[in-house]
Length: 334
Ligand code: LMR
Image (cartoon, rainbow, N blue to C red; front, side):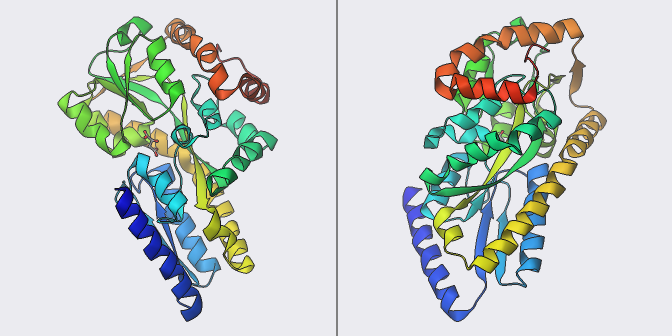
């Protein structure tokens, strides 16, 4: 795979140079792992529409959804090598390339609602986190929402003890690993595109994700139960290859920045509704029983996951966790 990425990178570099001289459009490949009909998929398509419009066709954006170009682990490597120019990986996926701080978003119950999230991402803390990407050959352009995660399995998940001994698919985040360990479950890192089959064949017993991801990957067809936990958040950092970005003519970069700003506003204004709609569709399909927790059951889940904060403090950084909590103004216990 590495060879393939390297070959693609050199072709991309040659194409870029060739395009600049022949005045052919600059091609910007945008790869992502989810379906087009999701918050990220729709924001990516909106960016394409606006970027091509604002640059008068000087930039051609090719969007590759559903892991058609790269799977989770490969996409950030491909971006760093310049084989693809833009991605929007979830916060959870930056740990393996050495940026652990984004895993703060994975802490259970750290974000009470999207309003608190916005305070973090739109403020100095959000900007400070984006800056960390520079040293990895990428520029952070925006934060895109998906929404809150829910738990699913072939077993009813109500009390923390229900998770004991079950295998759960996780994204590549140490915080998520600690979260499932706190519940006595066995976390297993797996690419997003492999989850449906792993659930279907019983390689894992359950998973956590947003309603829109669960529905568009058809996970509800192979999971008997899903519990409304809203225990964690999935959001994305839109990143662009730094050399590509810095090498663009300034006027083009400005138009692309404008397109990104508007695509972000568009996507983030719709994400909550898209997750609500997906939940409605899952209910309509009737294959998964949706379980709601009482306030006492919700409190028991929060309590069971609180040790995660201590477990990962040295990895994510206690000052960052404190700053995050200060911004949201709420305790993860309520
Ligand atoms: C996952 O791997 O579960 C998510 O990060 C997929 C995505 O990009 O929403």
